[in-house]
Length: 452
Ligand SMILES: C[S@@+](CC[C@H](N)C(=O)[O-])C[C@H]1O[C@@H](n2cnc3c(N)ncnc32)[C@H](O)[C@@H]1O
Image (cartoon, rainbow, N blue to C red; front, side, top):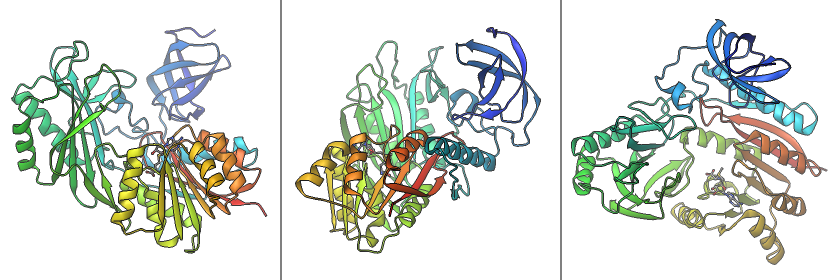
């Protein structure tokens, strides 16, 4: 019987979904973060459950050739880049194998990934920095990232996946806060002001938007802070203040005020321009987003005659990206503000052949099919991690578009939904696009063709 605190030397036989190494002891899997398949490691057992256990590395007896020096001081603590200790090419191989195994298992046959889209330079790729600000155990104001599964803030002055200018601006805000003695949010006493700093970059336009989430209506020295930031960083086009005085883990509150500029920035994906407001969803890795959307459009095989559905459309990016080659776009998205952005984005790009609807796909799509007799030749689906609702899939099985291009950030729910659609569709192609290098997250694009 395995026991907590006991030490063992184990062979790592596989890597799991989150990149953790897996060994077998007493017939049950033991999950060991930061270990790599092929390694031999000395571990200490941390927790034993009936079907599995958790351990931590004490010593690596035999290193994988894919292990690399960690180039980040906080990676181990923050847990964001759970693959930081592995060479980049091998992280891609791991993601590919994991997607192939998951989809093959669901469909009961061998499925291979046809196309792998790596990042040429997998550093500083994010266009959105989001740092909590709070009080440390010794009473100091701190800014950084949360330690994995906790609310302890790890001070972060440099993060390898953040945009360098965003990091610089965040550091300047932090220094201003310390210099001017501005009280930061204290989670214990629910007092103080700044609780989050959010910085978004239009990487193609060089426009920057800063959002300061505050517990108090007025940030002390607010005007001075705005003057300081806009004179030091002329690319800051807008600064927003979001008021969140609730005792909650949710980052943004209900009220947002623009304290500098127009309240938005622009960015380009391909030749299409997008307006980004403080609350808009926008993919965080724009370099890879262009590649992801290009692959989706390639799979869609558009000729200009097609009517398309862009389901779970966010601010309309996939449909608008594809718009030069389609006859008509219908987009559906649950967040009303995102639909307003999608309509505005269509206008900015002079797209007249689009209609966007706010609401859940599983409600709006069947309604549109029934009341307006809508159908589509090609459907793009890009749902959240939980995948598609059955009603949405049933409606597609009724509409029967010639092609479905399914974009997913969760291979497990993708595989489940592919199995459901298999009744009428053949899975033709599978690509992975590395949107989140050095994290375990994996983005997949698949192309399904109507049978017969
Ligand atoms: C992975 S994002 C994709 C957004 C967009 N396609 C893009 O590439 O930026 C998933 C989107 O689905 C929306 N969503 C979640 N559940 C939904 C539902 N039941 N019906 C419609 N949209 C939903 C989310 O608000 C989010 O914008």
